[in-house]
Image (tube, rainbow, N blue to C red; front, side, top):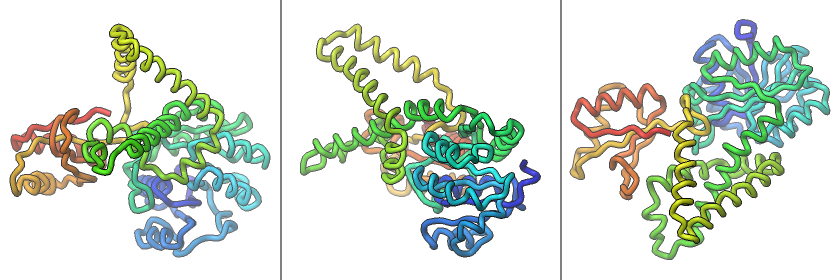
Length: 368
C-alpha cells in the first residue's frame, strides 16, 4: 500500500492528525496530502509549513481523489464525516479514524455498509498540549497504534494498512472494536477521569492562600498531567464509551474502598499487600516508547546561582539537542533533581544525559 498510496486526506489537522501527516512525509516525502479543519488558520499554517497541498478549506467532495482518509476530529464529528464520505470516496479508498472509541463509528460504518472500507484506528499517543503547532513526526515513534475492522474487511487490505502504519514508526495492534473499547476504557479513559477528579478535589479543598496549588509538584503533577487534555475531546469520548467507563468507575471505587478499609482499620498487612501488588504489576509494565503519553525527561541537580541554568542549556544547544520544556522543581519530596528537562525523543534525552554527566552534573532519568 505504501508504494501505491499517492494522495492522503485529513479531516481535522490538530495534534494527532498533524503528527500523522508529518510522520508520513518524513518516510514518504512524495505523498500528496489534502486536509480540511474547523479553522481556516490551521489550513493556512499547514500550507505555509508545506505539510499539505491545498491552501484553503476543502469541500467534502474534494476528498474523492484520496487513497486513504484519516478522520481526526472528535468521535461524534468523525461519525458525521463518515456519513458524508460514503458516496464520495473511491471503491478502494480506506477510511480510518484516530478516535479513542470504536463502538459508535463502527456502528455507523455497518449502517452505511462500508465496513469493507473502514478500519478503525487509535494511536496510543498524545500530549497535554493540543493543536497543529504542537504536532511532531516523532509523536508516533514506537507508539502502540490499535487497528480494528469487521470480518468483511479484506485481510490483505487490513494487513497492507497495518504495514503502512508500522512503516511510519508506530506499532500496530489488531483488535475487535469491542476489545478496543473495553481495553482503552481501562487504561486510558478511567485514568483521565481519576486525574481530572483529583485536580478538581485539590482546587475545591484549597484555601485562599492556594497552598496546595503552590506545593503541588512531583508525583501530583505526574499523575494529573493528562487532566490538561482537551475538555471537548473527552466529552465526546465519555459520551461514546459511557457503559464501559461507568462500569470501570464502579470497579475503581471498589478498589479505593479496599485501601480505605485497610487504612481505617490500621491494618498494616493489608496496606503493605495492596501497595506491593500495585508496585509489582506497575514495575512489570514495559513501555516501548509510549502508551498513553510519552515523557522523555531528565532531572538535573544545579546550584542556585546566576548563570547555572543558562550554562546547562548552552551545553545542550552546543550538542544540537532540542529541548521541549524545562521547569524548576521547588517541591523535591519525590524528585531526584531540581531542574526538569523534557525532550522530544528518547535519543535526545540519552544524548543529553551523556553530555551533562560528562560535565559533572548529577543527572537521573525518570522511567515512565
